[in-house]
Amino acid sequence: MSDGLPTWGALGAAQFLTRIPIRLRAAPDLAKAVPWFPVIGALIGATTGGVAAGLMELTPPTVAATVAVLLGIIVTGAFHEDGLADTADAMGGWTPERRREILKDSRHGSYGVAAMCGTIVLRIACIAALTPAAAFAALVAAHTLGRGAAVGVMGFAHPVAADGLGADSTRSLTRSRAVIGMAGALAIAALVTGWWVGPFAVAALVSTIVVAAVARRAFGEVSGDILGAVEQVAECVILVVATGLASRHSLWW
Image (cartoon, rainbow, N blue to C red; front, side):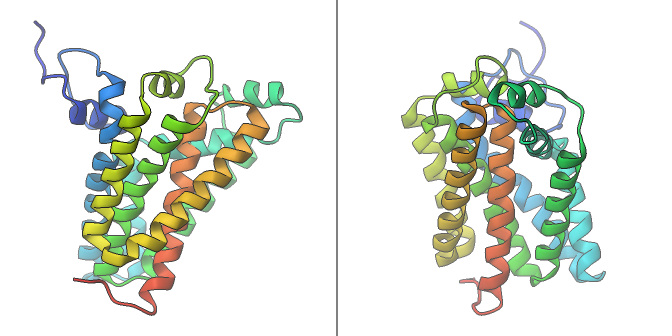
């Protein structure tokens, strides 16, 4: 037996979604790891949210928000941002076949760069507009529900791409496990944000349906890059909703 940690679902999810150097004794079972995606998202959100909240006591909100967003990108290796950029680039193709061909190209074009930069700027602006407590709670909810949205697409969207990480994850995931992952995402977000989870969940659901429908029409399939786009769009929409809620209501805690 080689050195390394036991192949446990949560550790497999952390290895898959982050750049944290986790050594496992064997390749993670994606079917068991995927339901843990929202939990890993919550930990990432708590880390970035804690940094944002702490720095807001020492620096201007924009500086704190920028550091928090960049930290999240470093921890995840821009995993979801890359998927969004690839998807945006591929939307420039004229046929589903051409779009799928562009989607497989690892290079980023103008659409992809614009989409990636746009989401980063939007997240920074939203976080900077929040109080430290609201920023922490919103980041936990956004990262958690964003991964939960991707899990939902994995479990319920068909057909999937013929190959790739997204296809492997989706084919190995049962709907019951997808439901467990989504329920866990809602529970974690509700614990942190209270009744705010209702508007957040609606925002995530609507954005996910829109992105999945556009992807199905444009590509005829769901791939790992599209799952990244689902997560990023849901995360951004939730943060936008958070700015509206925070301007009128207080957190339960």
